[in-house]
Image 1 (tube, one colour):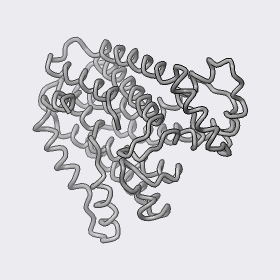
Image 2 (cartoon, helix red, strand yellow; image 1 turned 90 degrees about the horizontal axis):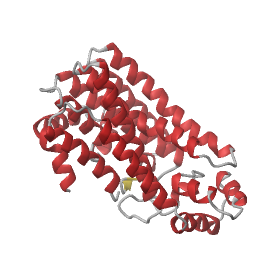
Image 3 (cartoon, helix red, strand yellow; image 1 turned 180 degrees about the horizontal axis):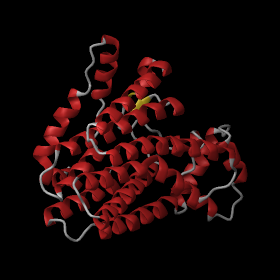
Image 4 (cartoon, helix red, strand yellow; image 1 turned 30 degrees about the horizontal axis):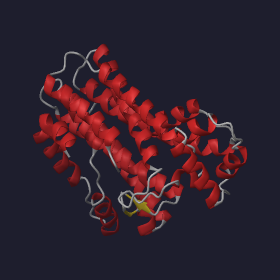
Length: 323
């Protein structure tokens, strides 16, 4: 994709080095563990979070060794959280392939997730920066808290856009924010630069999750996520929240059924179709575009033009992706 070429252009050599280093972490002398790690390595995505770490670091010149460890750490945290999420959600696929829990069962999947998170802590310790170590340790708790909040909402019959953004800030945006903030810290950025990159990362993460939620309203063989999958799991995302709270119709019975995980296929279909045809998707897209513009405006004015182009392309890739 053209966006990805523009994103990687300033960091092509460094990103290749990162991928080599990262792959070397997925080996173990224990054959049983090694099998699990090889399974996970084959399911790498675009590595959007390490890319973001690298882009921020490149703004300050040559990328130090500590940044490579940070990039590995955040990707490992991400991978570990996905494994645990799939167990919680009972998902059978991840990126169009079998999830770890589908392939090996819940017990091994949970242990694999724990193992990956432990590797992330080893990598962040290798930065020898206590501020980063503390931040990643806290981030792991924040991600878990975000998932707990999402499950806790199942006990509520009301819909709230504020609650939605609180959840996605914790479960998604916090990791993107850590990528940009900690990379800037490791590269000696001043407070204003750190805050600027923190804002960019946070908003990029919000955009990423909103787009992910929009995609749930469209069938996709590539993602393995059927239309309405979030609703089947009791999750109301931005398109449904907007359309149902701006409707003259009483949706309380549907909301209660969906939140209690007792909704019929017909109720799921009705909410899905109403969200699509009554402005829910359009509103989510508008909100995402507004956030994207805010992220671009947050970028430090001092960064080189080629990197500014890469950061803009990064956002474009997020909001225009199809999987």
